[in-house]
Length: 157
Image (tube, rainbow, N blue to C red; front, top):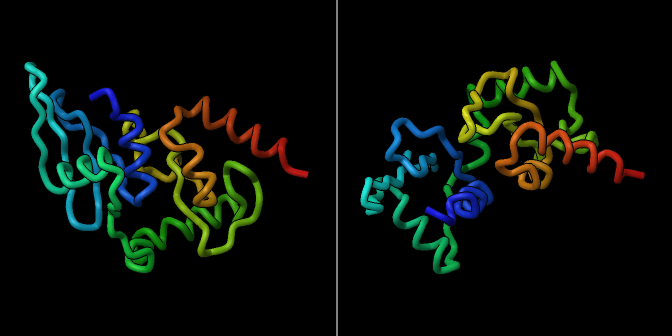
């Protein structure tokens, strides 16, 4: 699927979490508040979709509105809230990318090595970032994210 990187960015901008594929036929796996969805492609190039993958991909191609449907209060409740508290205690409330302080309502969890590139949800692979900084980092590899971090920090007054 030639648009897979653009589609991944589009999905994450709408709140979906990109997951690691579980077999060689998976082109893309992602989580929304409603389900885990997958796009498969067989050896002949024929695609099949599960969950919301077809609806999301159609909306992406047509430029229609689509959202992963996460309610931030629910999404950051429980285990996620404990993770954020752990990361705050470890790193403070400065964005891991730009270095500026983050208000509670503009705090996201950033994967240093993206899940789609084999990264994990372990706290050693996570940092807190402004939502906008997290979007800029997108699915960059760790080296590109470090370059972005340097750019963002050097651009500050």
